[in-house]
Length: 320
Image (tube, rainbow, N blue to C red; front, side):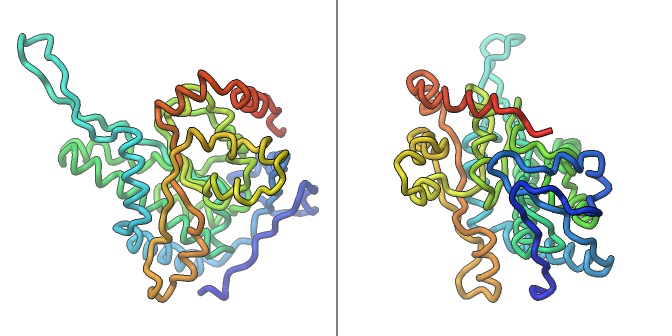
């Protein structure tokens, strides 16, 4: 199936070619596909046959089944659960009954937001990354079911199934159907990473450009940053690739390194797996990134230069 993939067309800050076919679900926002400063402009890929769409759905399902119990998903799930204190048993005093403590299980299930996966119709990486997102969502759902019991799980399952959203400007109508088959909601407008979170949120951003990461950080910088976890490229690796001292000083992803906790992830399968090369291509350089409370407090209190950089990026006008 690999040979059937078509290359996604990516261009730097140009205008779409005449007659570009944007997906119906994003037609009202076609003009917003234009790139932000530092972003690539991406055109939706051609649509595919119903037969190939069905094959891709089957391939995503198979990849998700492989990844669900892998270290790739389980390590990511562990960090997410620890950071958001999912299913943590907390004791509290029952005010109605003197001397009686009650136990309460926290289940603040995070929203999953996928940025920049690409078109599942055109990219093997995108298919594997969608498989990861599906496996992660299902693992979170399973975790809540085990903790809350079958009754609560049945009551909450619909909510859990709809807590994952996805966007890529390269997506077409077939991509939307594929995503919705796995209960992923389509984000209709290009947010350019400027979504402000007010509840637990996991951003899945494999192989995205640094501008998108910086927008996510800057638009949530402050106490709200504790509400997010990023699964994406290693920030440390970004710093290693920047040779000039001036550019390093200006790069937000380098500036936050003293305060971010970064856990490297595996590619999901062993080297002897027949599709190892594809998994490695889809998940190389992937880490889980979060800001522990103590580090965040120190950054907000003491690092005035970083706070000023964040404010400057956050004030940058969103493309129209």
